[in-house]
Amino acid sequence: DSRTTSPTQSPLLFITSLIYHRGHHPHFKYSCHYRPRILVLLVVTACRKLATNARRMTYHLAYFDLRARGEPVRWVLRALDVSFTEERLDFFTEWKTRKPEFEWGVVPVLVCEGVQLHQTTTICRYLGEKHQLASKDLLQAARQQEVVEAFHDVSVYVAFAFFARMRQDEMQKTVMWDKVKIRIPELLKNLETRITKQGWILSSEMTWVDVFVAAYLDTYDNYLPGTLAAAPKVKCLLEHVKAIPSIKTWIEERPDWQKFEEPEGLV
Image (cartoon, rainbow, N blue to C red):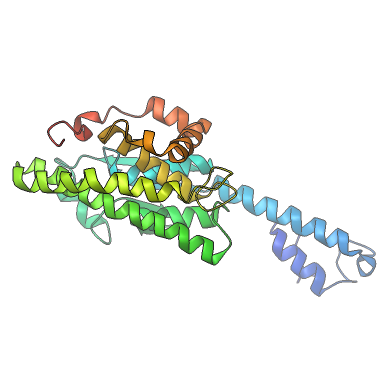
């Protein structure tokens, strides 16, 4: 039957055609007598093949040559063990001329299937949902998103403080950094109450939110050494994520960006 497909081509199309044309499928002489468990096995096989193909997909990440808002994306990509390339732009020598290439004029940008995805949270959420590293419970996912937005709020103050330092605006730098020193401990205190007994954020298993948050915690721990001591569950979360082999390797091998991110002159 020319309307059917081979199981070596598209697994889902194969299953669909098998069910639709049962009794006439060329691959199975007695298809009308299939038992339900055989169809279940075919569905499971198809899903595994789709998952494998998804892992093989190559993404392209573009961001500046520093951690900041690009680091959570790098961590999520590595936690998922997916293939990706990265282009690191120099803010001072490249960004002005390259900026028009990006639809919203900002980075990070993840190119997937020819489409540009902007914004750190959007990218990480997309990757988590696509690769089954996200909560399937809508209310739980919304509560996790609260945590993500809280970290984003603090990161804005951090960014303003560093840009003020670059402009040598001492007053603005002091105001913003004073806010950071207040907001980070508050953030950690609230996060501490949202760590489950399994050690993850509002979940019994790791999601992209844990990886996203850990990437920021890694940087905040550099800004305010010792702050995590007051939040032992949060500190343990960070250690668990950093122990993921691909992330551990990245931390050991990533470029020395400290010259851009040292809190010297901010504290």
